[in-house]
Length: 241
Image (cartoon, rainbow, N blue to C red; front, side, top):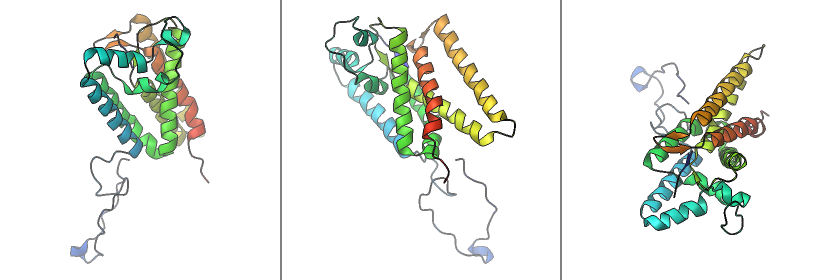
């Protein structure tokens, strides 16, 4: 998140093929996680999110610099616009969503898309496309709100999908803890410890300094997305029938 300025496959026992007198093998028909499937098998919503982010960045690269700057200030999240500290017309809630699809550069975009592929594909397959999209967008919105509350007078646009991806990361942690907990609740304690370590690391980054090689990083928005993702997954995870 930048504030810029302007299944694994299941191992199965070997079955005899036609050469050993066994039944002929059926061709692979695209089932997720099936043996013999494609190497790159990205889930639907994650794929479209990646495509949309890439398309937006490509379109921006074709704009003149002054038009791109205006687009960033119109659709990026400028906290001062929400609090009235900057005169920019009526308050528009749309940037709480649109800022998630704007990035500060190819390096920023690439890092976020790799993280989305790493955490999003498994999460979408676990909870379903609709629930995944809700969690993703609401985590991003929560990160934007955290930025507004902590820096109400900031005129610097907040850009990127990092808060949404932080929410996905938190959800994965919570789900893994739920499947691995024992009688003593060791899994829940483990995810609680990891969550605390992650949040403290973000707080330290925010206190020590937000400036990195990618620009000014809004660590606080990461925390907002993470906390909301951790809370939402308990509601959104499908219940066994």
